[in-house]
Length: 288
Image 1 (tube, rainbow, N blue to C red):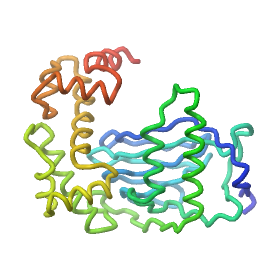
Image 2: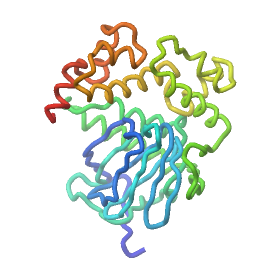
Image 3: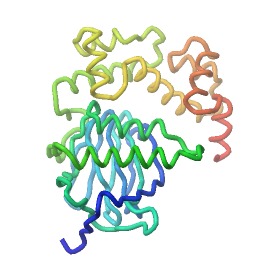
């Protein structure tokens, strides 16, 4: 290919721009857009669609996309919001190059998208990078670069499984396995009972038709998190949405999200956002 650049993997000096792990806004759309850099996007929960010049395909948890610069594409999130990790980067920190297709010398071809699997070593690396490494430390970029190079080594070494074609499919019906379908059915129940303070991991296991230990294992395999962590994060996602209404008292938001104790809710919220619910609302309404 005339626009393909061959890189020496031993000479990679990646430049990291942005990274995060968060839910997409329910039924929201990103794009059409063209990136100035490269981006990894890993779908971690629920579904949606991805569209580019090659057509439209469904998003499934575990699918990893390598988005290249100057390629027009669109993401459309599913009805419950699509949890995903993203990492914006350049392969070379000094030249900010290359812009076109990239191939690492000696590496296996990179199917795009590929089904990574959240429980694989590469999937865990991607999740760890997007969640744990925060800016601010003088060693932050060094730690991130080491983790990123490890991720690239795993991806290049394979074996890699291309994501199956699901063009035009309903994202709520998508699923590469029965296990993933069972977990997703349980997550649908979770969405309907977020305000129930009695909701527990056993309820989700029952919805999935599994024993609780079996469901815990599958939930971690499919989503990268345990059931209680998933419940807590979904409730905090709902809380962020409800806090946008300045007429809603904080205690009412707490109850609507399944927290009987507003002080416990405020403590969890601060752990997640670094701000109290009141501070978060004030920052959002002030445009900060």
